[in-house]
Image (cartoon, rainbow, N blue to C red):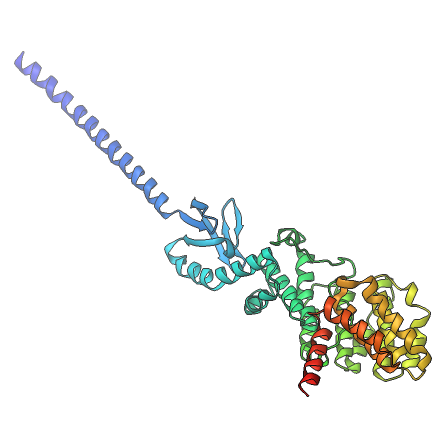
Amino acid sequence: MFLRSSKTKSATTPVKRRSSFVMVLSAALFSFLILLSFSNTAKADRIILRNLKILNGVTVTAFDEDGVKIAGQGIVTWDEIERGTVAADKQAGFDRLKLELGTPLYRIRQRLTVGDYSGLVEEAEKLLPRYRSRSSQSAYMVVQALMWGRLADNRREEAVEAYLLCFDQLRNNKSYYEKLPGPRKLNYDATSGFTSEIVPVFFDKEAAKKILPKIRTTAQSMKAPIPQAALIYYVTIALAAEDVAAADNLLANVKDTPAITGQWKTLCEAQKHVLAKEYELAEIILAGQVYSMHQFNRPAAHYWLGTARILGSDPNKVERGALDLLIIPATQGDKSSELSAAALHRAMQAYQRLKQPGNLASVRKELLSKFSGTFHATQLKKQLSNSNDL
């Protein structure tokens, strides 16, 4: 009996040992899984936004100048990010882009939101080399800020470069337009490529000379087909720079249709005659066509027709030319403030030639009061200041 009992105990002991081993192994595996879970949580990325929202436990898949790509959430732009923690081997690159781009982009966003357009130029120009060849919401915000900033600073010729970059961005993705911060939106025609914010009539010869090569390079880099408006902006800036050869080279490429672009062949030919002091020829070209011009082109037609008449040899046409010019501020006003101011400035020349001091004073007052921040008003203020100093 003793021997039989002893054999039974010997048979059951290994079973108990295997059971204990399995329990220990299961406990160790469970502990490992818990540690692994905590480890994965610890390695998850964390982004804190400027609005104090925290994106915790997210996965940053990539980042570049356009923003931070988060799995399942799309792109978060640098101006939205306060700080973040990403994989150790990517942290330095993340911090560098955040430092270089976050604050400048945020400043641009804030100024667009409140309408501080003159304050946009400094930051936008610094960022332009980083974004001019990119296509993204941030890239569009930079070039749009640059366009409006340059316009606010009376740098219309340079604003054309920025506008062409804006137009190309919007051809790639029209949603950029709607997502731009602030209430202002670009007024442009997607078909022709014109913007009513820059009528293709320019006045600053030195500024035109300086920007002309950049306008050409920008137009050449645009997505095909290059819009006809880009050619016309280049031609009219070339004429403002008095580079008729450069203007003629591209003017031949402007198509006759649609009318909004084709009519600029006529307008540019008239401008060339004005530059050559062939005022009667310019008048002959425009006199019979001004009222049949496309509504976008008509203010430019009135400007060059009026200019030809007030500078021509027939004194009887000078007053008529002044009236051609005064149509522009009467119909366009602030919609084309620079062209309205230029027209008033030309009208002053007419009334000076006609020796009508009352009309001269009235037009001068309108220029200085209603269009005080324009190129021509600024030039007039300098002239008046210099004459007072004498």
